[in-house]
Image 1: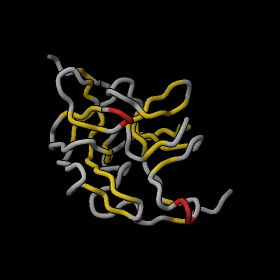
Image 2: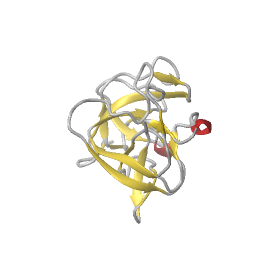
Image 3: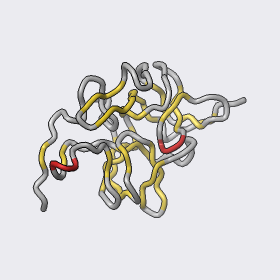
Length: 166
């Protein structure tokens, strides 16, 4: 077994970092395998027992959680799981996700390209609700040793997704 270096608060500084559990309510997390590199806090699909980034809000299996350790000093600057890693995927609960635009508290949440969340509009599949406002690349940016990622907390609703009617 490799010796892992504890990361402490490296991934969570100021606003919640991508892939951080966002409340103390009950939640469900499964462990799955990544097909390729998977960033923290994005929505994923599961096909043939392999996890990959989701797109367009359909077939979302869950949201990738972050890790609280680094595998080596050289790996400390990446907010992602590597290919073939066993990764934690939140299936139910509240989690901090990456966003691609400003979001408002209470707005319906969906997934755009590369598993990144956005506010749902007509025709989108809603998989959750934003629990707080999020500013893209400004106030809700998690500024860590590992870069900057815009985030906002989402309450997942994977069991009952719906499409916004036209």
